[in-house]
Structures are given as C-alpha cells and as structure tokens.
Image (cartoon, rainbow, N blue to C red; front, side, top):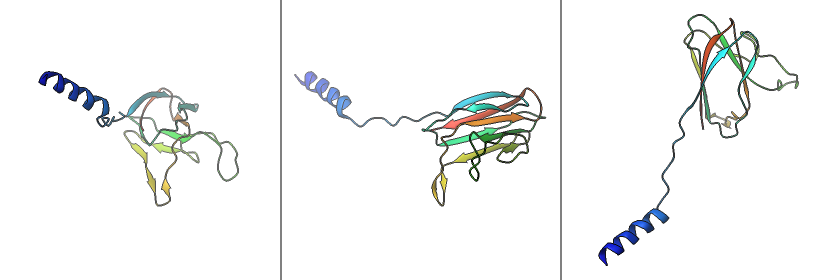
Length: 128
C-alpha cells in the first residue's frame, strides 16, 4: 500500500508540478554573402536579440532591416557603407538587444545582408 501511495504521489507531482523553464538556444545562421543584397533573416515575431558577426579576414559585410525608409516610405537597397546599413569590418560583431529608454525594441522585421567582395562569410545568432 505504501508503494502505491508513493507512485500516486509521484504521478500527481509530475502531473501538477511546475513546468520546467525551457531555454531557447541561440539559432545560428552561417552565411555566404555576395555583392548583391539578399535576405538573411525572415520576419520573426518571437525574436528578442540579434548578433551579427563578420568571421572573415578580408571583406566588409553589412546588414540592414528589410523594408522601406521610415521618413518617406521609399525602399532602400542594403549596401556596404550605405545608409541604413550596419557595417562590420573583419572580425567585428554587432548586437541588437532588448530595449532602451523608450521601451522594447521591435526586432521582428526581416534582414538583408551584402558584402564588399563575393563569397564573404557571415554569422547571425538569433535569440528569442
């Protein structure tokens, strides 16, 4: 009888116990970027942080949000050293996270990437 009570207690604990906190791993996107801009991340409403990294030794790479410019609604092209682009020299990283004085940052948009030379490596870490 004592064994049955122990088994029932364990079952109830598993059934009604607090759920374990699941930790989302960073999702890794290894890239090969060319001299023409291309989409590197799709829209994601769950995105909480992005880390862009240039693991290459020679090329400058750039990332920019997909979408129109806010001031006039006109589309813009992602380009190295272009307006709206986050430029990364070799071995540099750039993190966009969380929020600031005005509240959380919306990171849900898609992102484009481009390189100063063809076949340049890039890495993105996406956290939710």
